[in-house]
Image 1 (cartoon, one colour):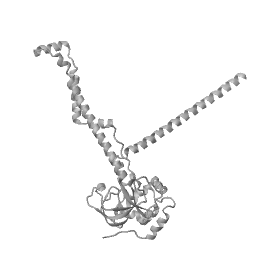
Image 2 (cartoon, one colour; image 1 turned 135 degrees about the horizontal axis):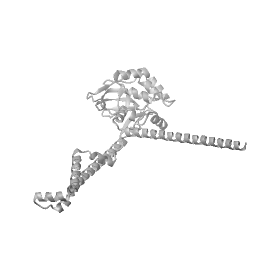
Image 3 (cartoon, helix red, strand yellow; image 1 turned 90 degrees about the vertical axis):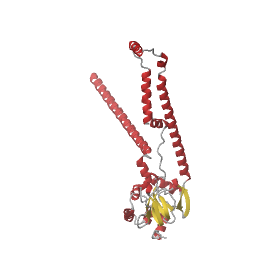
Image 4 (cartoon, helix red, strand yellow; image 1 turned 180 degrees about the vertical axis):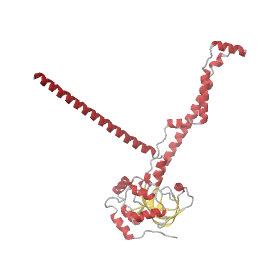
Length: 343
């Protein structure tokens, strides 16, 4: 079995000794751009900026052997600096939005138009003279009862459309609610193996932070982006991101980049977590597809409101200043007029 592991354990011990000292020497933007690279390009960037994977560990104040110390303040600081390993879901659609979507069905639109036309014709009454001539030409007498009940057909069609729309919207709303509850329960129960303080522990996926050293094995779904530290015949299925069905072999000398949302199909290894949540490749794709769209819109809306509020305050201050200047000028003019009158 082929084996790939990091070189230079002295640097690893040095990183462990200093992983709690000072600030991080890697920015979030820098790590995101690193994980966008593949193969030789990724290796070249690591060698150019960090020397090797152990150098990246040193910059992130972690150890490739012992991982993070596991201190609560350190974990909190990393979450604040690099984000949490959570992709915020898209806001659920309201019941009225689901009703509107159900109304877009072509068959229902045709029925609505037919119902409106039927109702319109049922309430239409021709002039008396024309009605008498029509009756004589037909050779019969108009059934007044049938004419008065003509609206029932159109109303029945509309009532049927309303029932179908409400049932469809309620079913969609129930399914979405159940799906979100199941997804939330799965996320809360899902755990992953990491190394903290030299001990192999399992933590909730949402608690994984940048700088963690995670152990991966056959069957795992990677919860975050990372760089390979050590691998044993590691092969990854990246079809969920790239669409390629062939398994990609991951080695330190060929392609050490591992992406969230991909599956480990063969082998095992250790990776350094470099991007989590919305900053991982899966999170970026979800954001582009609109999963994080509403949250971004909310932030933009808040910023816009703050800007308008500041503008209103500035206008108010400017108005008060002009009013004050006008009053001062008037007072000064009155004083001059009084003085001229005394003279």
